[in-house]
Image 1 (cartoon, one colour):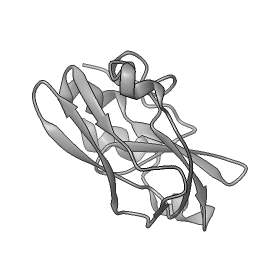
Image 2 (cartoon, one colour; image 1 turned 180 degrees about the horizontal axis):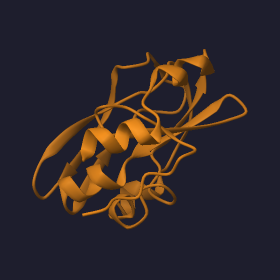
Image 3 (tube, rainbow, N blue to C red; image 1 turned 90 degrees about the vertical axis):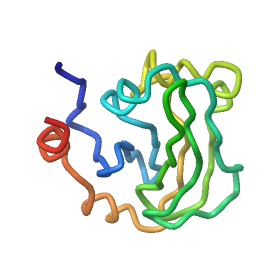
Length: 127
C-alpha cells in the first residue's frame, strides 16, 4: 500500500509530521499513522499557551483499535490548537495533512526540525 508523504514536511519516528512557516510549526499525524490507527474517535490536545519540549508527549489520539501518545517535534509555546477535532476527530483520518492538523507551536528553535526525518527517510521507515 502506498501512503501520502508530502516532501515539504519533516517527520518523527513516532509518525507525527511538522510543517514550519515563519517560525510557527504546524503538527499532525501521518497518513500511515491514521491508517494504522483506524477510525479516530477522540483527540486530546494541550491548551493554547502551554509550553512543550521537543520530543515530549503533548497529547493522545484514540481510535477504535488503540490509544497512542502524540509527541512534539519541536519545543515552544502552543499558539493554536485545532478545536474542530473535538467535535470531528474523523478529520484526522479524512485529511491528516490538511483539516486534520492538531496544533501549532511557536518554535523556540526552528532548526530542531533539521534533526527530524525527511520525507524520503520517513518513507524508508514505513516501507
